[in-house]
Amino acid sequence: MPTTILIVEDEQDLLDTLEFNLQREGYATRRAASGRAGLEAAALEPAPDLVLLDLMLPDISGTEVCRQLRAAERTRSVPVVMLTARGEEVDRVVGFEVGADDYVTKPFSVRELMLRVRAILRRAGTKAEAPSRLQHGDLEVDVAGHRVWVGGNEIRLTALEFRLLATLLSRAGRVQTRDTLLSDVWGMHAGLTTRTVDTHVTRLRKKLGDAGSYIETLRGVGYRFRDSQDGGAALPPGAGAPSPSASPGAKAVEAR
Image (cartoon, rainbow, N blue to C red):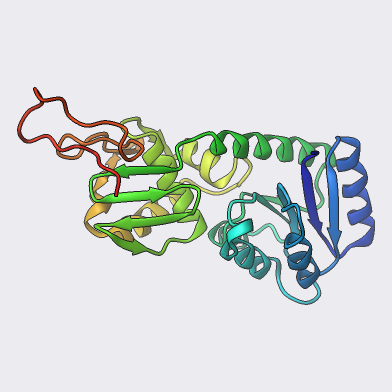
């Protein structure tokens, strides 16, 4: 079955151009000219593999459409690329906060957009092969379900905060520079400053409470998720337990 891309764009000429080029690249397309029509199209079978979403729509805003896509179970993990004539940093930050995977400012090169679409779909395919759950001490992350628990209590994160946490946790023990996080979490072409990373890490730590201490700051370098917590590690639940010869203080990483 071909990869399906949903285009939500109210400019007819641009909608036609995007559909033509996507189909030429071998993608199946679905189109909508308003936010409500876009949500209805996203609910059809099969679910889209990626959404190109205009920010300025005639009925409801693209940010609200993105928020609703992220709230729905079947579209929660579908990549969203926002298309907009507004290029201010605050607009990009809002877009990423509600769960956009990339942000393209008009006018843009259609060829570059095709390359971005291909790269995002490739990343999405890689994520699908990753473990569906990760656990580290009191922290448990359901990657597929976009849910997080600390000490058994569910923590509500934005889509961007979740991507940031999942990225750090999946690379536990490895230093992540701010530029790397901007590229992998916000998108390579986000056009944001590294200070944005610091702001979101601070916010994430606060929401995680005591588990926020798992995220270490390496001054002048970036961030690292601690690779051990009382002998545990960032692993899929049940992936391992200490051997009989393990030290008495070591704890197994257990599935709930």
